[in-house]
Image 1: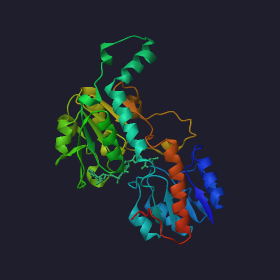
Image 2: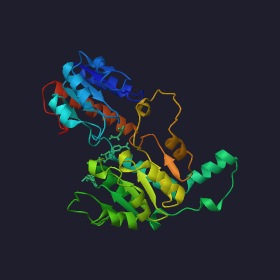
Image 3: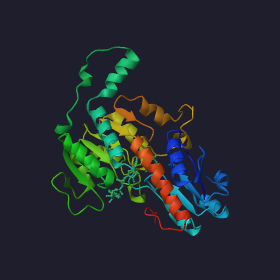
Image 4: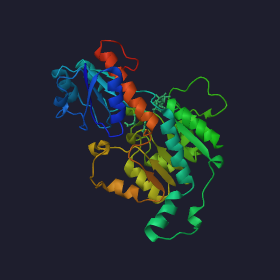
Length: 331
Ligand code: NAD
Ligand code: COI
């Protein structure tokens, strides 16, 4: 059996090599992104492992079918960028890694909430732009325990985020399209998203991107939110209208934002060896705001996550290539 790992980063390679040695399977790595032009690199392999946030298109699945490739194992959770019908039509089975380390993303969301609540961006700005190192009234922050946190999406990551926010003493309310029966005493489900918008001081997003939540956070919603509100998006960029977010931050409709996922994430984002400078006007603007923390889709990125992403993905790929039914089939 021969497997190929696309979009590899240098921090993944030791885990890939160890997995190959442990299983006595030849695994080739490439930094290339998988698309119709690059699919040919996978010719002769029994399966492909991949991690990317740009679309896996209908044309890509047709190309994989032509190459006789029927197994694609994602190293990540989200499947919103996949044309699943096209994959099925072209006989390509797909797996994901639903739970490589939900704690990693939840901790990152809480880190963002702390950074923004304690105005660290303003401290950094004073230091980096004015080279001044002294107190400022602008640095006065808020305790998490004084705030109501609204969590949208109470799945694996959302539930960890709730635990962490509760640990810091926050009042937590939550909304889920499919609420779980037992909420316990840790948080209270609200029936309507409007309740989250209107009551929360911090809103943390932990739901998948779907057609019905595209640009859920737009001008109208920002107007409904509290002026002191902080929005944390470690879920998917398409849930937030970026232009409306920038307006909301500049006009004071909301106070701050933590942005790990942005709509229109480009192919450059996932090239960890890239030396390209950012040119996107929105990215540049957001990166310079002291009330924003902007990160390159990195909430997942811990040693624990990387190890599990590689191992679980390659285990799924091996199972499929051997004709078995993997645990994490995407349907
Ligand atoms: P999960 O499937 O365990 O939980 C998702 C929850 O969202 C479920 O409870 C579901 O009922 C709910 N939901 C679905 N649609 C909804 C909607 N329209 N409104 C409200 N709730 C809705 O998934 P998870 O593991 O918690 O991951 C959540 C998302 O986090 C992923 O889909 C992915 O987009 C994102 N993610 C981001 C990173 C990162 O590095 N930034 C890493 C992993 C996952
Ligand atoms: C996911 O696992 O869905 C993520 O968002 C992480 C990213 C590396 C694609």
